[in-house]
Image 1: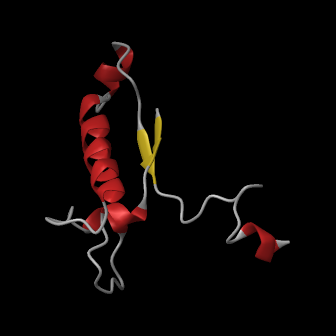
Image 2 (image 1 turned 120 degrees about the horizontal axis):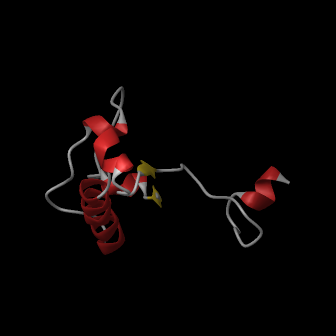
Length: 84
């Protein structure tokens, strides 16, 4: 399973420099409901999936969570036109 989440799941409104995403805690207060639901979904999905080779051998789902900076495509009106 590949779960795509948002970097907004760790954003508190303050500057973040020199810290990796996985080093940041989940905020106590979110700036948007979208970020809050994505953050809690990530926690639940990663907890429910395979953690060891034994889990994988017993047909539990392997997982990874990724947070792409930006997804580009034909309906993107912000970044895609500038790339062209």
